[in-house]
Length: 469
Image (cartoon, rainbow, N blue to C red):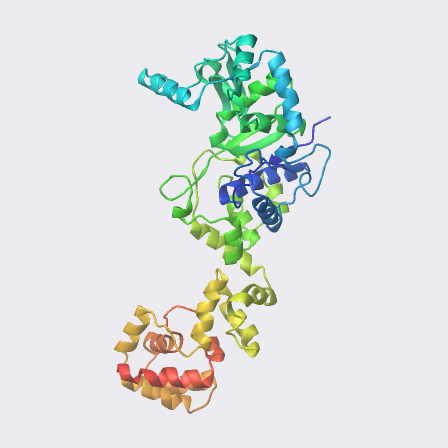
């Protein structure tokens, strides 16, 4: 019988969910749902100094907003809990003792200064820095004596000598590491807190995780974790290491590239479908360039389509998927999305026309506020291009427009009269008219914009530009 796929997302609650972690969660979710498997949420809060409850709550809210509901984990429950590492100390202690009794772990009393000096000397000698094994040969009596003196110590895993470790990575293919290149590593800190390396591996095994997709910065952790699990006789998941998201300069994505947390993007007005569709394609190939639901993204997801090339973040691509997502919303939903931004500006009787006219112009609600101010406030802001057009337009055009306004409020009648009185057509007619009424040369259909403007604004904006002639 085939073991059901079980993936996990195991963040540390030390900050708001960012795009890199969100993509990791998404890929694990899609891989699980592809086969009707289980998506697990586990919280790695062993670093109690940096972990905060507020970030745990924020993280779960963001995942749910994105639609990434977990099948097992905090607030959901399951058979393999608890799901916070701080509640699993007794479990880790059992396995520490097992390793100590098998002489596969030992206490290390080296200070930070001693370790730094050792690494420095290794670099001078042209060697890769790794633990020199200073405490590896302490006898039980020597270790006990140091403990009796109250010396702080860590717990290190004793690596097997001169062994080659091979494994198949879901993304990067066959991998090979030599134990001599790794060095005995810390599995328990001097504060008694478990290291990430240790508890992450133990939890994956005990929670029966079958597949773990994570960033390639964890690739060198994998041989260490596999060795721990081998020593304890525990099963290991299949690991897949995806390329990290980078900015335009190929350096890791950060705030200077415009990266924002999921919470910030949500508050700006991005839709969850925009993020899931863009991030699902950032490092994974989908042949169809259409907006997918999460179920459709999962159906078309495959670990064989996870790429090894740089996953370069492009804000314009995110905006593209945002605009596609907006096309799926009704006018009523668009208005709800805009209400906080323009509800205080757009008159009630203009809601429907405003949304219908401008929805194709919008990416975020803040864009709507600019158009609302252009339509419904007296102080119109003009772009430089619009001002250049207005200054080049003869006074006679605006005089003709003022006369045409007296023919009535109907746009077709106004335009017919303006063409007759000004003798202009095409660009020479529409550019100055658009510039005067909108303050910009780009924007929605002029005839419908006319319907948004009050008669007072039509008159004042056209009459006012006679001074530019």
